[in-house]
Image (cartoon, rainbow, N blue to C red):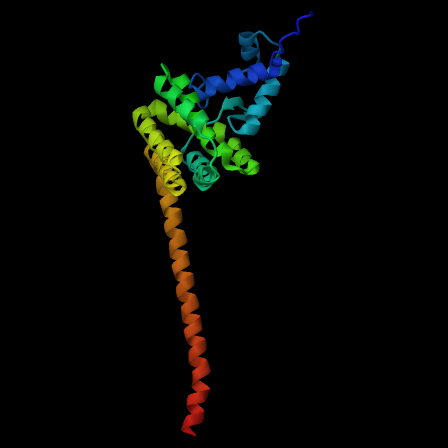
Length: 254
């Protein structure tokens, strides 16, 4: 019997995965230049697969292509963190709520949590944590919702890598993950979603205080506008009621 060759990833995919891994594990830091010739030499390939890989990474938001600066790892600031985590806060808890309500298996999440606890280095732990979150939202029953969260997954991991480098919080993260999974396995869809929302919000608030302040200011502005709109509506209604009443009063006086 002729042996079937084992398929291997294309050169572009190989380079793509390798660069992404280095970015998300902090080996390539935000703002660092990515030179095609240097990367090609490191990976033993021509510049073509490197160029294609960098284009793909630019599309996912992990690198930035500039006419003057070339290609660099994307910088992480409070605005970026707020944008990425706002999407997660809006979508991820709801995806988990739906997954729990439909009785989806969360075995992959349990396995990922175990790998994170047993991890010996930052890269391994970070990968396991990413898999944990994905295992919570992917079985939500809505493929589009899962894909939308997948689209911001790499950017969220970049934010996390920068935050953890500045303030490691693995033990706190692990404890929160265990509580989220406990609630989900118990069938408490709302409780699990609430715990996940608090987990995501507290992380970005600790890591990027300015992002939290911007979010609070936005919410306060929206609340103020809603209050003003309500008051204006009530005042308008009261004025109209008074105008409707006035002719009847005048008729009575006659």
